[in-house]
Image (cartoon, rainbow, N blue to C red; front, side, top):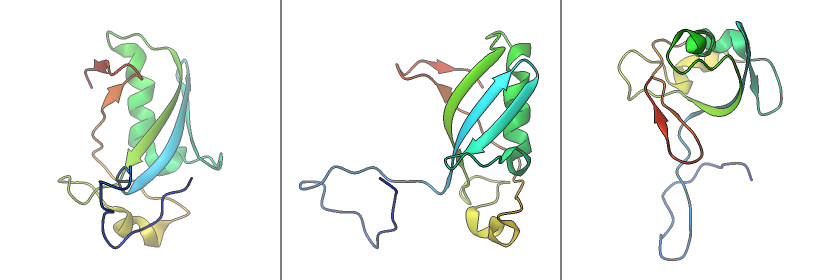
Amino acid sequence: MMAVPAAELPDASEWSYEVKWDGYRAQIVKNGRSVSLASRNLKDITTQFIAVAEAARRLDERRDRLRSIIGDSGVLLSDALPGTAGRQACRPALPSGCVAQPFRAARSDVNGWRARA
C-alpha cells in the first residue's frame, strides 16, 4: 500500500497507522567497492544520493567489515535537519537528481540492533 497525504492524523483508537516521513525508499546494493541505489520502481538513483552511496562504500573500512549487502532503506529528506534539503527544495531538480548533504545515517537490523554510524 502506498502512502497518501492526509490533512490530519486519524483517531488512534480506531486505526493503526504510521507516519511517513518525506523521503525515498531505496534499495542499497553493495558488492565490494561497487555501490548502487535503486528506487522502489528499480530506477537507478545512485547519482541523486551520492553521500549515501559513499557511506555504504565505506562500510568495509569500519569495524563492521560489511563487504557485500543488500539493504532496504529510506532516504529521509528533512527540512528539520540543519544543513539538509527537504523534498520541496529538491523538486525543481527531480527527476534528474538532487544531492542534499550532509546525510545522517542510522543503521539497524530487523532485530533492533543498532550499529554506530
